[in-house]
Structure formats: C-alpha cells, structure tokens
Length: 167
Image (cartoon, rainbow, N blue to C red; front, top):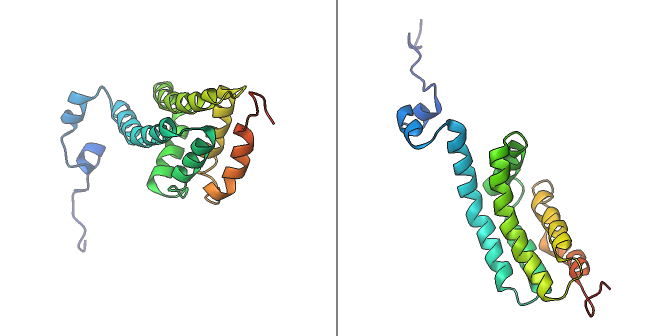
C-alpha cells in the first residue's frame, strides 16, 4: 500500500480548505455564492473608489484622462487585480446579483468621469465616459500593452471640447 493513507484526509469543501467550519459560512451568508459575491465586490471597491477619487480631484478632463490610464497602468492583465476584474465580469454574465453589484460600482466611477466632462462643457459627457471606461477597464485586462502613454493621446482627442463643441 505504500505511504498512501487508507482514508482521504484532504479537505473536501471550501470551508475545510479555509480551515473553518462550514456552519460559520452559512451563519453569516445565505450561500457560498453570496460569500463570493461579497468578497469580489469588496475587493473591487477600493480600486474603483481610488480611481473615482482621482477623477474627483482632477481640475479638468485632460488631467482626468491622464490620471485614469496612469492608475490602470498598475494592472498588467495577469496581476491579481486584473484577473479579479476579468473573472468577476465573466461571473456577472451568469449571476444577475453580481452583475448589479458590479454595475453599481462602475456607475459611481462613471458618474465621476461624467461630472468632470460635464464641468468642461463636453457635449456628450456620459457617452464619452462610457467609451473611456470601456477602453481602460475592459481592454487593459486583455492587452497589457495598453499603457497610459499609448492611450492618453487618443483619450485626449475624445474628451476635447472647444466652446462646448467637439473639435
């Protein structure tokens, strides 16, 4: 029989792997899925709030556009934060509760960018905010080459206004 134990002693549940009783999980959460949702959203929240704070502090759209890609440059596409966002977006396609929770986080971030664009008189602040966020948040996870230096010139053209009209 060799060195193999007769009984499988490896942990068989998530709770066992975390070295906690499964009853503890169910006491605080209605399900494992609810626990995972909260963990994902709580991990994403500081990142979204940090970027929102950068946007709120930006005096104009040009500074906001410089701040966002520079903030996103911290992500490589394979780092834990990038993978969390990618996996969370994928999971949200199958979990409407998670989708709503992530939407709420992204809506706050989008509102900050929209506010910066509105203050400058941009003719389409919300649509522009959606486009900028899609370029940064969705594509960065798939292409680590999307750096602040590479994106900023294009993003500047998207957010530029002259007397309230696009150039």
